[in-house]
Amino acid sequence: MKIHLRDIREEESEYLFTEKDPWILQTIEAVDEIPSYRPASVKLHSKSKARPISVAMRIMEVDGVIVISGNVKAQVELLCSRCASPFLYDLEPPFKALLSQDPILAGAEETHATIGHQGSSASPFAEDLDISHVKEDHINLADILAEQVALKMPFQPLCKADCKGVCPTCGSDLNQGRCACKKVESNTPFSILRDYQLKPSKNDSKKSR
Image (cartoon, rainbow, N blue to C red; front, side):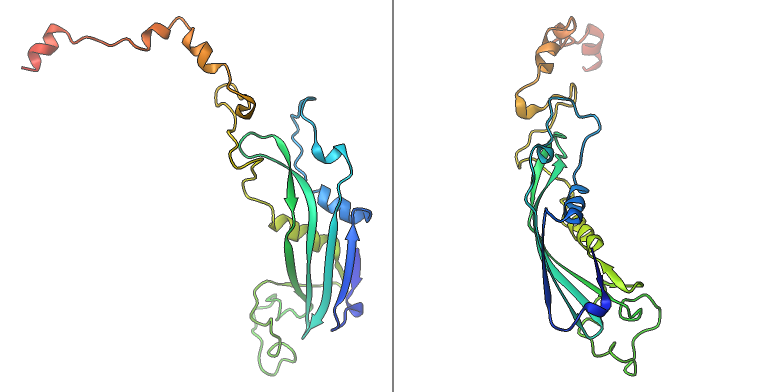
């Protein structure tokens, strides 16, 4: 969805979107992690039923800076970093994005703002390093939302805090129970060597004297 810069005023405008807006649903679904190796037994939670999504955005212009703030409430499907199982992650982050057509405010030029530069020295965001430069005459809200959602994703997502992960030998999900690796290992022909201890020879005992 595009918002033309000429339509942005100093008075705050509020927009409410839901999963019924196609671009909202596409933006959230683009975050989903779907394993390419997924067996038939592993179900994708996000595809089993429609997911409710609520996005509120407030847009206003302050001294040459466009301020977009709001919050997202949705669920995205991630892969656990320990057991690699898909799970639903509750996403409820507030966000704020700052944009400007002024390349000096956005830090797009090496020259610094001066007192004689109209708007730059007076802006309360003049020293903010997170102002993005807008080169077009419009803002794509889908790009803003996608960027903000990506920034809120956990670096190492976990399906649960005490996830046991997988067996490093057979790859079984240890959350489903113990694997058979230890049992198989104990029944191998070499199991008898596990407790075998070498006895020192007579020559070794003489050397130690």
